[in-house]
Image 1 (cartoon, rainbow, N blue to C red):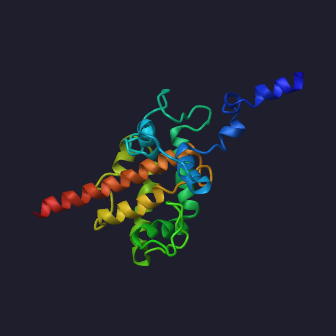
Image 2 (image 1 turned 90 degrees about the horizontal axis):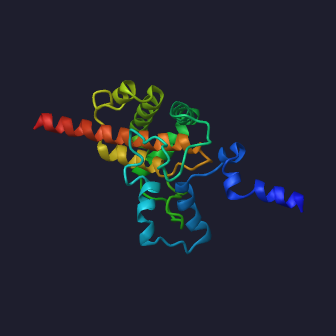
Image 3 (image 1 turned 90 degrees about the vertical axis):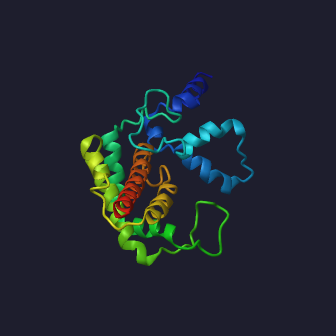
Length: 223
């Protein structure tokens, strides 16, 4: 009886969520929300969940820089993960650098036609092929993302994402399609930890926004 009582205390959800050994392999809400429906089916969203869905999917600005601090208001907290913002950015950059060629080819799928035959999982497209002609542009976009991650917050990070620093001649559509394709398919913990994924999604959005701003400024100057 005593042993059972100890086990119950150890493996309650609250207790497990405080254990570093579990927290560091824990998934994030975004991954769960999008990978479970194709596997188990019959998952339905309800109107009462719209506010939470917007934060989970980043459509409310929660995937935009500067990222909000974890002051207790985040839907999925960062406490207990032992990774500050700098460490999370470095992890995201390391993941991009470690497998940069394959990641570039994967992101370039966003600029090609969907694979055939299609599959049931919305974000899974194993039969897709990258747009080969777009690989140099995608490579440049990923280099800018890595640069911004390594420069960090503050003035240096802002400069790395400013229109003056980003490469010219990149179509905003190409940036949004390729980096958006990658951003929406970052899986936790398969690809990286939750803090790193949060930083990478926000920095990919930062590059998308910067490319759009640079193109808009060039169009305005030419008119």
